[in-house]
Length: 574
Image 1 (cartoon, helix red, strand yellow):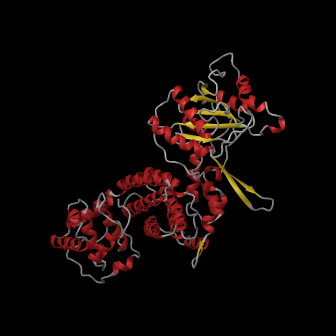
Image 2 (cartoon, helix red, strand yellow):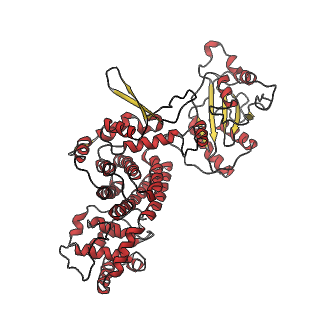
Image 3 (cartoon, one colour):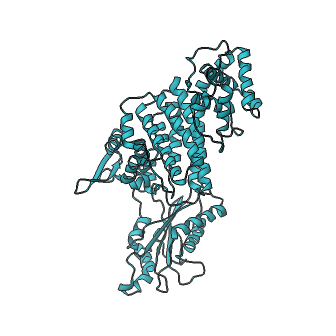
């Protein structure tokens, strides 16, 4: 149940014409009253003798009874209440009850108050109603409707329980504006997957991922095919921007533009500028670092490997950093997911796109982000974009699976952090993101893991027994479970590769296992494979590596400890 308090208005008749009219795109069907302050209130939708003016005069009567000097300029209150898409269609009687509960909860018409405001609830679609009220009470006083938005949300949570509807998380005012009913109906008629507002928000977010300057940002918007208008001050300074889809036009066939701030709070030009203007003490500006990084083009697999390292180090920040740093890292994580979705192969693209879309909600809260601490993640997003699209096979496909695996841990840690802070919507968004990343991983991982699996099966039996010994030495409490998993062969091949590269397999395993708990993992061996290959700097795709015939000597014990830094013991594994 989604209530929304709209801006106060000045003309009761104007709002009635809209509520009873066909709608902006003729989406209103059978407009009629479901409830009102008076059961005998005229209904222009069902009574042919009733007019809009009849209803308007009765609603405005307490206002007009006041002297002109005492009448409030904005006296029209408007609340819409919408059911969730998966909720059943409610009856008029049920919507009437919901309307009465809403006007009581918000202070428009408290229960048992005979001198309350006049109001009417109009239904012109299956899934929502509109409540119109005039804020002057019958006794001439103005209604006390402070915090009406919060009160309507609290009542909505109770209504969801009473009616068995989908229970939504309480909002905190940081979410992006939802598409209007007219925008949704228009998108449905045109066969579009998402309303223009949402399509623009996703496109602008992708354009902003890892961006280093205004010019680059606007170049990316233009390359994405958007129409752009810039708002320039008399001094020549750029103040803001608006964007439009070329095929989204009004009745005069003019493009419908949206400002960045109306798409999402963090997409205004000043907020986007903060992404590259922050600096970390001792590191200089983000802009300088990002520009220098563009001098040499990197491969998609290199970009993914670098992003994997940045994502993994961010998990430590979520466990040990302060709130401002964590908020900045979560915002930058959204940029990484946007960049990954933009450059993903076809078989993972949909789930990664949905993951980025879901995590957008988890990037914003009332905790102020301390920009500058997120440099590594923003650079990772930039590397992904400039590295270009990845193939779904070979090293590209394997490093994609590795990055998705690490991103899963990060968003799971984000869900835990938001949960501790009682950020209900953000925590739910992070959990939804994790499910999409799980699905993307399941699409990306089979091919590279199959190659490792075959390598492990071809290992000489003495060598495989040796790797099992390392496993029992490093993680005795998990060893037997890992040995029984299908992924054990891939892990054995990885341990052999690490030993050939000069690492101590047991030490490497012990460090990999302690960095986050593993007893809830769906496949412990899969998780350890990607951790070890990243820590030991092994190719993610092992198909081109030489086969092992004998055990390689340990050339440099302790190399594992130099591969990564930090220690991380909390959270949950995939």
